[in-house]
Image (cartoon, rainbow, N blue to C red):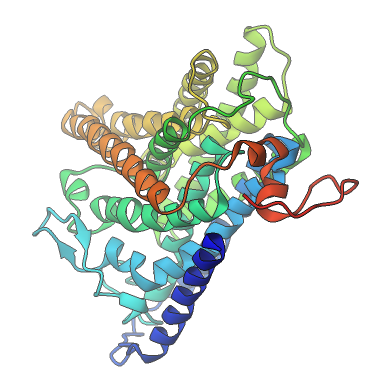
Length: 446
């Protein structure tokens, strides 16, 4: 009965939002269409679609790595993010990230939730602060896709042992209280990190570091799987390759789209994105081979993704030569971090922190080393010092804040699945579905 009531409450909340949305004024009376550039608009429409493709790509990437009894649940955790975060973003998330800054001029901490509540004032006209040459609504949708993939990235750390209903609640809390404020700090004109001169072109700090530290907190909070000591092979390596390919393809929208225009910076970001990913993939394979391992499809896939992660904060700020250095460095450091993780008691199931967390950290620090005019190699130390300080602040905020969100979630809905549910797999226990079509699904709920 308790579970049934919980689902009914969730449905009632969604229905209430639906009715509320009908009566909220649109605030679109004074839209400015005079500065819209068709080329920028076309590119941002394309980039937005490309970024959304990354989340299904992540689903295949993670699903292929999971145990066969958890493939569907692992993939659904990414897909459901597209639904939940989309609604949360329209209602209040976008406003917290990009609304009128609370915290003073140049020291903003978060946006006013009422500024763009229910997308009030977000329409087809331009916005001088965020979208000067294309529709403001398109900017909001582009930023939404970043918000969608961030909590989806976290799921790899606790794959195979999370209650689906609890994960959905955690995702709402994470977007509202962790992701949106961090986006405000970094990308809003009054955000304090932005005013310190911290450089994050496309989300190395906002997306990958936050997801990495939240994943680390999740692995610690959830504890080890019952069979964590047993070696298991990825369930579907072709899924991993497919997912990695979709991520690489979509990442061009992720990074090049962050130029917010069809211009030379977008082209430079695209070149750097492809080059860093290629360099990281090759480095991962060669590094594994140097350790006596055979080159593997899984290793190549992880390597290219780590390269994509690392170049994200730097994509529009560095030269193509620096992008190679960033890709090579991130691959070696992340590979070594995975080795250390396997020797520890930490059960970060799909190595989210070593790949995304460490990749984001490496990329963020090396951005401050190589960035044009303000990088350490140009004799400027200020940006690098602020990036070091940002690493401490963001790490503490996202790790500690996520632990708090896990605790609150667990108090409302137990996060961890029952031992029996974990044993038979989340596909059956949470969704009454099975990847193995020979096996007949049977209804078991926990």
